[in-house]
Image (cartoon, rainbow, N blue to C red; front, side, top):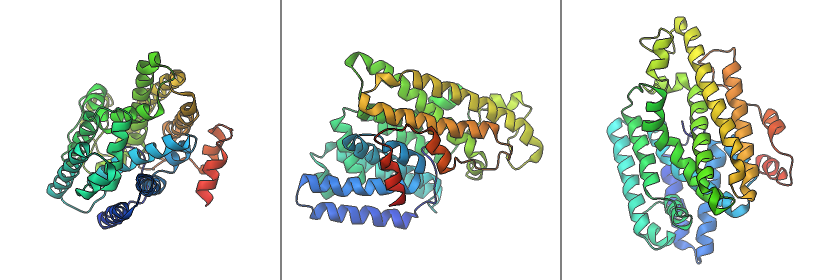
Length: 333
């Protein structure tokens, strides 16, 4: 779980989206038309899959918002391959390898439409254009795809450090770095602080999503709760369906939620390192997902309950600014 979960599109629907978007791009007359087509489709992906992230990105200026939407679409599709597509593990790996090959071809292409003409899905081609425009190291997305491959054949994590270094780095931290490049620093001297804030926020977001989906992840054969924390609570073999483990698992969840809370706080301390026109959106993200993290840690409904924050409660923690009208308009349109 990287950036939230919703009722997923099927593999067939994703294939239709890629095919239709590519067709429209190839028919487009100008570079501006190409970007408009791709960005609108990327926005649909974000709006479909993550209400919370969709809301907070409305606080970004238009150009940055469009680039963030394209980034989200580029990470969403591989995530769906390993999370929801009705295919076996061999087919999952084949689809990921095919997507990785498209990425490398897009890096070598001179433009989005040239990449699409070479068979690259337009959403990925547009993401590569953001990579180039924002000087994002190409290896970051390769690291992301490595994390997706690990989900195909999941293995336990010995400790929180193991989880962060060998999974969260690829699944979330590099995505945070993508966003940091788009948000931009407040000044050249703030780059390191901005990257540090992005990393802390990415780890916190990923931990919150893990804690919300403990039961769902186990059904996929995955355990993101570190082994050492489970053993400390007397759990030798994790089983979310075992009611006798729930009290101990609740303590593990609260400990990791506290870890995430500390990282949200550290991310917030460095938000001023980002460009001023990005700070409102970042603070909104910290507030909304921090609120979810708190609800998870305080929930009395059990670990198999998937916690969520009602829309009106999200509204209460969002900044009241000139940007506020945008989320409401997008959600009710």
